[in-house]
Image 1 (cartoon, rainbow, N blue to C red):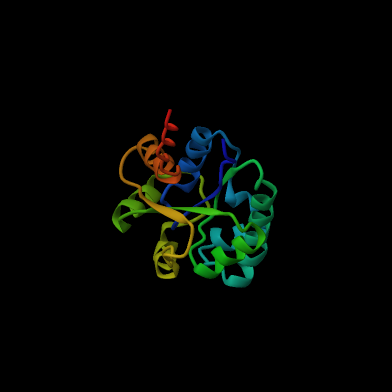
Image 2 (image 1 turned 90 degrees about the vertical axis):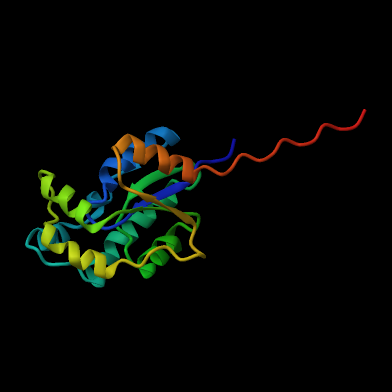
Length: 177
């Protein structure tokens, strides 16, 4: 059996990274890490005040997530991280080259509705436009999959795990007698 991948669950705020990530990790049998926990306090204060982070703010956060992912390379793992720009994903891959991205995608209206109903999160709905403006979807040369966020968390996680698993290879032919 091969080593499970280290998966970054990415997407704009409100797509369910924190909900789907642990479900995917459980199904893959690996550890989950909440990407928001890697933010320095100054970043959380800035976002809580409704101010988007800039690239300088994100650098130490991305590096910390990358170090965590690198440390999981031989065991697999799942971590949530918006990873909205290609340059952010490149920075993560610089620390952990084998990363696989799970891009949670969805209709803006659905995501805004979900954000409006969640409790105790520091990211206000008013920052959603900046998230969509920043988003650069996975490129064809990036290792990863896109999964739509319609449905229950369990349905989304099941689709994600199915998309992340490599296709079963055909059995080797029996040798001739």
